[in-house]
Picture (cartoon, rainbow over the protein chains, first blue to last red):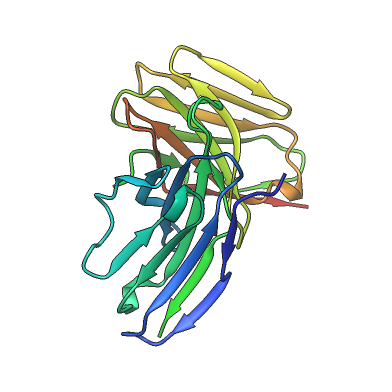
Length: 115
Length: 111
């Protein structure tokens, strides 16, 4: 079974430029998460989707960050414009309700460097 | 915000020794999970312990949970160089279908 797929794996952009990350969750997982992980820290939730509905986006900086999950499958996370402090790893994850109660499966992450 | 705090932040041991990592949290939980992250990779689920369980084993892993002290420990026995990674605890609180991660313990196992 394929895992959570993310792209791109690495991205270097200049500040004020836009960037987008794509995620394909595990087939059948209707819950999708975007986490941000700063160096030396644990992941912090940005947004959680149940199917196509964003049910928790309280930690998403809405002035520059946006996300969508069309048709309740793939998801895109966008930053526009990027700032130096946005340099981090952006992790997508998915889960299936009832499967071990919230066991989450992570992708390999998209590593963003803003210069 | 991060719910769990791991201790120590970094741990270095010799191959064959046991490694113990601790996690403390603040609020009532439904379950607590441990994840591993190799350098440059995503997180991998290791083990889940429910709030009504006190101890759980999986291979060389042993997890304990003390809800009265709001703490958990992860023991890796007979460590191997391949166990070198960051280990994170994560808590599932209340009805929120999400996990809150700690800041992690960086384990280095020297060959």
